[in-house]
Amino acid sequence: MPKQKTKRAATKRLKMSATGKFLQSRAGKGHLNCSKSRKRKRNLRGMKVMSAGDAAKAKTMLATYRR
Image (cartoon, rainbow, N blue to C red; front, side):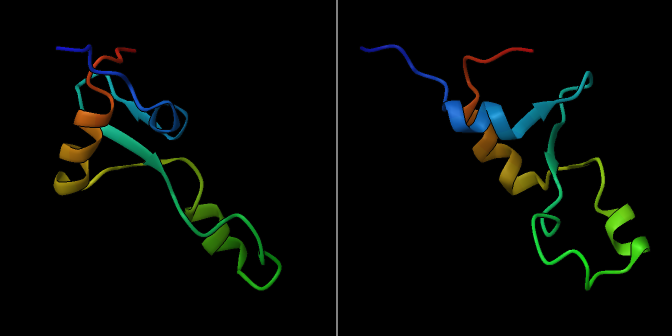
């Protein structure tokens, strides 16, 4: 049985918190930012906790990866 490999794209986009929750960066801040308000762009900063369904998929992608 071959070893399970970590998806390298997932390691660049996702983080695991100290309590074991998965964090992801928020979408919608890559381009066309001049038409968005300051408040909207400010609220897109930082990471957010991933939903339960997506976290289950992320767990399989990051099975061998520990941070």
